[in-house]
Image 1 (cartoon, rainbow, N blue to C red):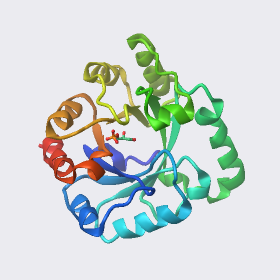
Image 2: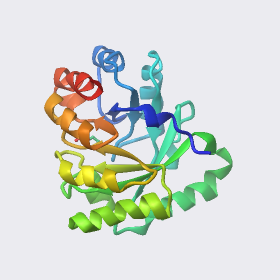
Image 3: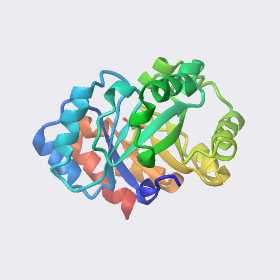
Image 4: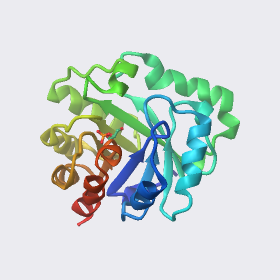
Length: 230
Ligand code: 1GP
């Protein structure tokens, strides 16, 4: 059985261990009414900065999960571990290679009961994650739908993450992707700059992820919680 705790999440803040957040801001984020904190980022993540952020978040009661793309940053003590696999990466290592190495080297330490496979569809070519993984973002609507259905129906991944990190995506496409899913739970993230876009994203996806806004405009970020959950 896969863990299913994330299925209740409508709104999530994603915090990056490599970015500074002051205690007062972190308190507001954790007491905002969001459903969970997802810890992750595309660069500069280390074991130490991940431990540090987790221990600060643990002062509060909300669930906290780690998006783990580098096994050397596998800090114990999170409520769950999302393992990203980039569907449209041109580099095999981001789809399956790193994962095989991690299981080979650390398999005996993996808490499988709290591990969730997370298939990413990366759609903003200018994002760090797209560059890092050499994602093929030049996709037709049909291509995107096919990637999503492959992950959902052929691979039975528990979570599909439509990632527009840094820019607001095409909500019509996101909605169509969701309509085509049979069992996967849909996360959307990218470019949410306030309650309006948060609401739009919430109409299209099951879980809305807000990242950069926490660091750029905290008040606007906090306002997205109510917009998504009500
Ligand atoms: C990033 O999807 C998240 O992985 C959130 O994106 O930072 O653009 O909000 P933003």
